[in-house]
Length: 309
Image (cartoon, rainbow, N blue to C red; front, side, top):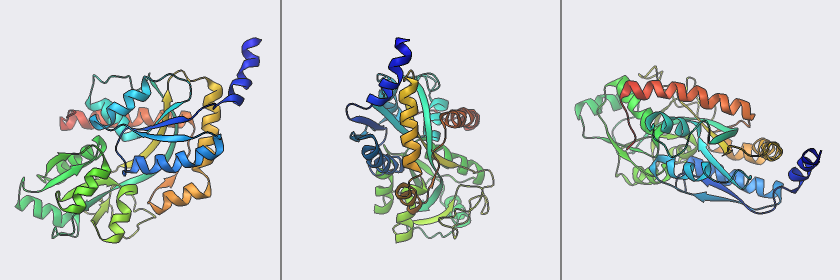
């Protein structure tokens, strides 16, 4: 009886102090953009500060491990791409956490395809032109990767097209995009959230998107499937997770406020401006997405022979 009586009290009292929202990449990338948008909205609804803590390194593993090993009290959350979470698990069998046991998916927040972009000085305006150029200069071009999802996407594209483009790793999409804009690298695959604005301003040139259908936010861009890579079908979904073992009352409160925030007009408009669709799924739907993508990426990683850097 005492336990039952304490449950609503626990939910009502939470949160009693600021909440840390871990982003396992540096500032400026799509994960960081979504996190800051969500943190601002949750700060208002939870009546406590929700602050973003960027913990970049090891393709997102450092920040994810920090969150996974934090106390399950509702004061440490982590926001990460479903692809990043599952591809890390597929590429690194000895992670410092168990992806399926140490973290609990809370909600899928948004969904957006990746974009294939190049520096404007590169004399290509389509995937087919890039293929021709890359094959005429094997190993001369390079691509920036701000995380394992982008690396896997590019390696899959290379497999599909026969291009020989050199992989250059970065600690986040923001840093990678900065170097692409500066002309230090020539090619990049990046989530639309981090690439659409720069594409529209002409600072990078977009060649296509990785979804099966054209994006409603940039319908002028062809899909890669249309232009020479029929198997490249990647949707970047960002999700909120918590350390496993969080009391169900706090889970319910967090999910309620998160879903409300994601579906608010302000957040939906902010995401749409960046080329992303607001989702706000249930924990069960989020968990199913993790399991599905883990199965898919494990097969592809094994076929391509990829391992973590």
